[in-house]
Length: 219
Image (cartoon, rainbow, N blue to C red; front, side):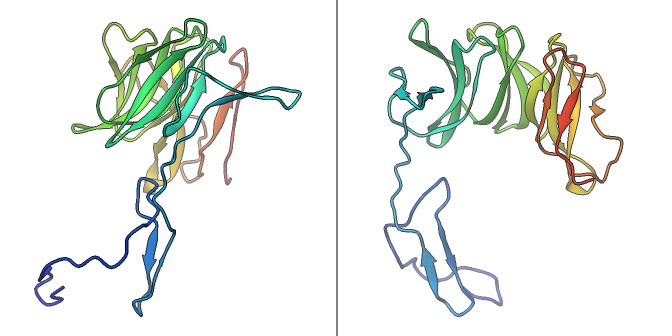
């Protein structure tokens, strides 16, 4: 590396192989040139399973061993929305336990977070595609249009019982995480959960009848 011209020079030379890869290579280099790394490769293939109250663990047969991301059960617990690593994509699927079937909701981009509407009919999710970051909603059957609820880096957490609003984590003032409630009408203004713009808020949930919201804060 030419520090004066800020350019790479010469041909690349392999320093080490067999480094653990969990979406990113797991290594670090000190100022003195010492390399520390986690050995790999890591396949990351897992299976999903039910954990019962009596401690029994039962593998879910519909799920092959592969790399899974974040997932959420439907309100009726008969379906699950789950992100599946299909390098370089992270796609969103809905698995129906009763039918033994699965439906792909996204075919491109990186979909990391999702939540269900209270009637179990739709899935709200955040995705990153070439055009940018968006929060979208789509029928859990994978039919019909994909509607845009908001643009930007937002993380959906829950939908109100009436199905009209969704709570999300957004980047607030000075990049501080903030929880807001977004109306399903795209142009409706978002309502902050807290009136303090400097509070860090990350995790929240809503009561069964929608009267109360619990959330974490460093207030």
